[in-house]
Length: 274
View 1 (spheres, rainbow, N blue to C red):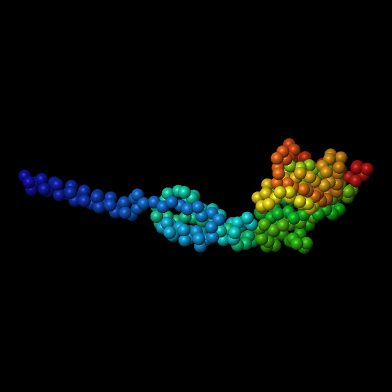
View 2 (tube, helix red, strand yellow):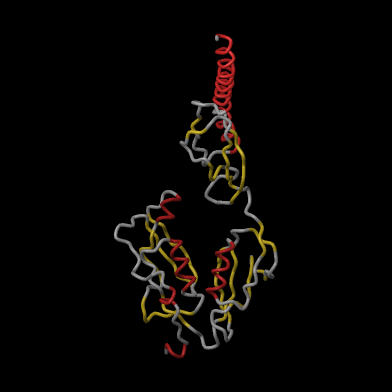
């Protein structure tokens, strides 16, 4: 009877030992109960980030790069997993770093596009508008040339992302003019957007009152402009408007509909304004 019992019990015990051994191995393999907190690496240099991850038994892996003027070159821009998450030791932390220089791209053909189309294309591919120049041409606000540092830049030329392009546009043949837009209450970035829509250029930023830091300058708003905004005050296409900024933005807000392109589409001729 005991032999029969042992013959039945032996496989059960063996199976239990195998299962228990497998459970112990699995706990060790998965580091059960052992975690590491992912640190906040954004803004750190790559060497510093790698050292911090190593000290927590984590590994760094760069998966992409972007370019920003606002962050130090080679610093961490983004990470996955996010800071503060608990992960297993040995986990890879995927990093996006700030490239030392912008990527090179192909210059598109902007000639014969409308001003709005050209600006949209430049924005999509990461180029900026430096200036709008106007020359007599029957097609008002049509691109007749694209310039980089004063020289014609043919389509297909290689250029770094983030560079600024001058658009040469048609001004018509009768001295077309546009109303002076109201810039009061706008930030510097919003001013550029409105001036592009209005076929005008930014002149001089005369002052930025109480702007002590880069953040102050970014958030500052226009409190004065020259020439002043008026529905009856019209200036030539491509003219410049000077602005005064202030970091004291209490009560400074743009007028309703300031970002509506149709608001800046009206032109008249020199003869109409006489």
